Image 1 (cartoon, rainbow, N blue to C red):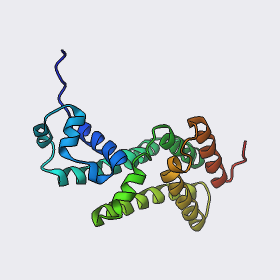
Image 2 (image 1 turned 135 degrees about the vertical axis):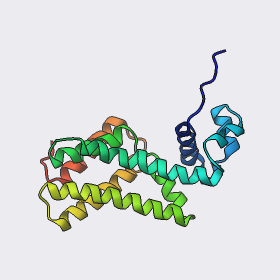
Image 3 (image 1 turned 90 degrees about the vertical axis):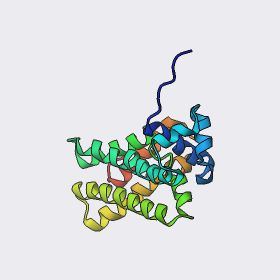
Image 4 (image 1 turned 120 degrees about the horizontal axis):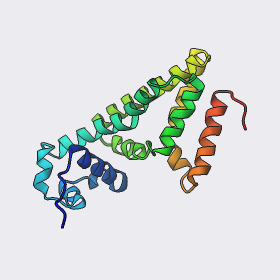
Length: 186
């Protein structure tokens, strides 16, 4: 039997986020996570002080992995703002980067700190895409409206188009981005 690799903090956070997605915040328990990962509960404490530390870390991980990473990758690009908007939308879809958004929104209903984090992340997403719309030549008011629409759509796309194939969802996302950027539909 091969030796078990030691788990990283990121391994724990990914597993915890999956529990949040499938069972809600009440299902995110240390023992459940340890069992899912096939390790003792004691190894959890190498990475987190307690469950509350895990929950706080989950929010930081979600923001970093599902928002900051997308923004940083986009900032490294040199394409036109319209192309960058399309690339962001496609990246979110292809990598399923909105998969935890509905779970975090549900969690925020009962937790003031989660609500603050959710608002911060939504504002960061809206501000970023709104700025791209402005760079594409839209007025600040138009850019904000389009930024709101695109960010909210991308956060809920997987729920709205549940059951659709990835190809179908990709076509819909591209159509929405083209519509918002006033590009001709193909």
